[in-house]
Length: 111
Image 1 (cartoon, rainbow, N blue to C red):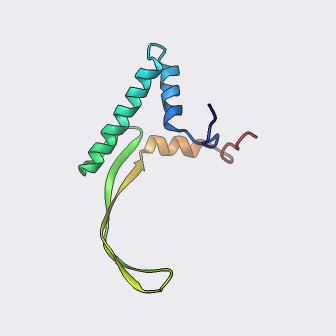
Image 2 (tube, rainbow, N blue to C red):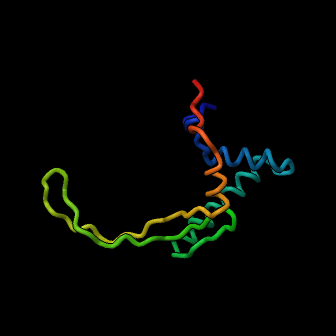
């Protein structure tokens, strides 16, 4: 099966494979179900406006972007842009420090 994501990008299927590899008693199908369930639960909570906190990892929340005036790039006409709610992730201290410990450039893709 060809991989379309760059080597330094972890996809949903990569998460499933990693989970199945770490927990030998989990079948690929069970791992897929677990990943889907967790991501669905996070998404559903955000849609309801809830905050999700995973200690040692980070928190997901919904931020409000206030309405503002924008400009149509073609006509230059002023356009009112309505208020928007957007998902936001804030990494926890442990995750920030772990990422910061890594030195050097990101891993390069293999040809």
